[in-house]
Length: 422
Image 1 (tube, helix red, strand yellow):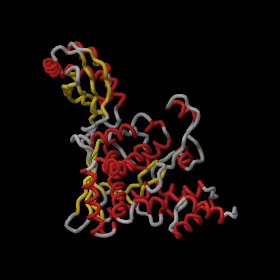
Image 2 (cartoon, helix red, strand yellow):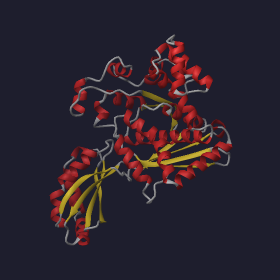
Image 3 (cartoon, one colour):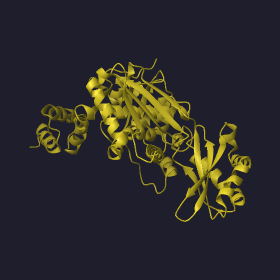
Image 4 (cartoon, helix red, strand yellow):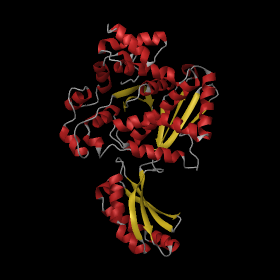
């Protein structure tokens, strides 16, 4: 049985960690070679993915450990350039592990496609005409993607929104499309464009914009977890975390940084699995402001035993088919490591990771301060900047930590002394 609790995992070699994480996951030789950095993604693949390719840009791929989600142990792949993000998520997950880990749910895989209609003489009557022709509009859209319909997806309903602007009342039609295991942008946009002539005929107006909305409020992912007060540092730390949440929920200046901490984790998993980080980020921040005020994406409470209870709910438009999820070898390998079989399952995992990331950030803020742990991990980067060779990095960092002086100028002095460069 796979366990995500591996004693001293961070102390193992890269090869040892890779072997543990990929064991029994069915990765191809090519994927293993790419993960171990012995082989690059083929340039022809890169050239097919985006325009004007001249090379490739690499970021570290790590895994968060100690995660138990819906009773299943997982290593969660994360791509990030920022030190402490992966360690923080792993530590928070460890604090939740013995209390059951994380439990997730989703609201489905419905995405919205918006069709903007201008120059409508009778907008309110036009709204009613659209609803009267709802079945015809849905059938026309579904003609465009019979494969999705055969899988149980396609347009499931239509909404008509009246959007008042400075010059007119726009009629905006929302196609509610079940995109199943795809993120769905291509399917939704194609349907919205295909049905345009019919919409113009029904409304008497002029269709301009036809595009997916990234405020995927019918595609929510939720997670909850209980974090041991003892593991976090005691009941007083838990109380401080709850107070920190209340601050973020009441003040948008604090909420912006609070939610950035959530997205540190979420975006790292979205990127690792080849999904659209910008779409997920946009949807999350829009959802945080849905009440008219920008607020926390997470909720934090203390239970009767003094433990920390956290929940998160946010849009999560991710897929396991289509786009980079099937073309980028690292994305494909990451999905195999997770062992997910549906977009819903992946969305729940990502939400749980975001909750853990936020718990770790708030614990650090509520105890020793955010910089202590972050700078300790960042010291490796500083040592590299100072010119440290691979065999001396740990020696230099250890001395800087012992001195409690993690400034670049001091690390530069230590590096020169260790390497005899004075």
